[in-house]
Length: 502
Image (cartoon, rainbow, N blue to C red; front, side, top):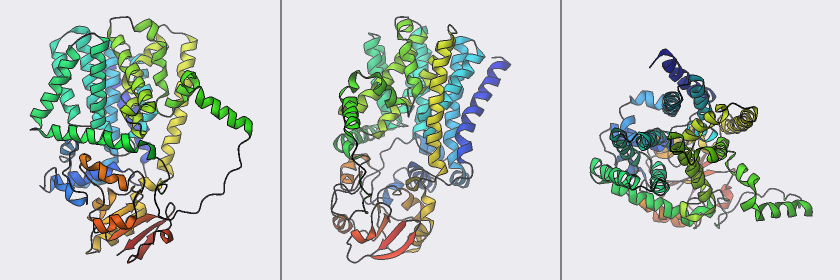
């Protein structure tokens, strides 16, 4: 490799890293998954094992989440991890950007083209937003991309070393992230059909067998937990994003004044929009616009690439199939109709970035550059909107709003906490050391249906069954006066949150 290659790798990392880090400088820690990850890592560092964090959750069950990231993070000094955990995902996603540059550079032998591909990847809204806080998804995405790239190289060049590499990376995917595993399963099954080959199925079988052997059988618990999560969302998908008290007898916050009735013309237009959505290209365009507008570009390349036998055909299949999975998950229950469907477009970002760079320059034309520019502008607008949640300190993502409440809990001899709504559930045990109403065992998610994503049972039922001593309430959503909890007193209030103590 020459100087141009290494300079391009460095530039790719800098572009991706800066886009993800600059908006976070001087901002508070945000996220939900961050605190569960750090809690598990702390228990590993204390020598309590991977199941150690399960003791902090009132719904019993051993932790069955894929473990690879947690063991990796346990190698990092605790002091650094607590202070700079928000940098980890930008670093990991920068590795994705470097991979995009490296693959494009090697295949196209063009540094400018490779830098264009990595810039498109770095600006893809869904992957940029995912990198704003610590979570498992970006880690899983890096290994997933390595798996698919090496499998594509095997597909074109037939070298068994690439197939073996794909299987090894695939094993690591299965032990890293459940949704990445779900996409990998779907893609390998689809490749077997589109390629009319049994090799993808054999490779997938080898990945599963390898994961079982490497984990000492623990992967079976991960797989059963994955099935449990899918079943949970198939049952509760309609409740995601609903009014938290829509199915509860708990008193509700004062309703906003009703809006004026829309005029008849507007009502008819909306009805026509929904009735014609299946044949309305604008509807399908707007559906992906908040996540990955670039994903539509490869569809324009199908006539010229789909019937070719080169590597670009493999990347096109990868891109088109993951886009199809997203649309299917949006409208059909069997893939889990919930907000997580946007993650399909994360696994679409790598091949799409590569194909978009090819589209704009081979052959070069003004209409192609115009198309890419419009999509790029759309992505930039979406990124600005996504980054706004960092700037405005979103309540549900910002545990610093409850710093004094957590300190009060930490000093108390009582235990058992429930959060209404559930946003800060993982922050409670991490910052206070108290047990909280939730579970680390995905096979027990059915028991969460009473509490998440909406409250469906009388609060007193949960309090008595799980011996809960504290209730943390976001009073901007739920008025304390409507809770009607005999025996509970207001212990303190902070930034719109109330702590009730029994």
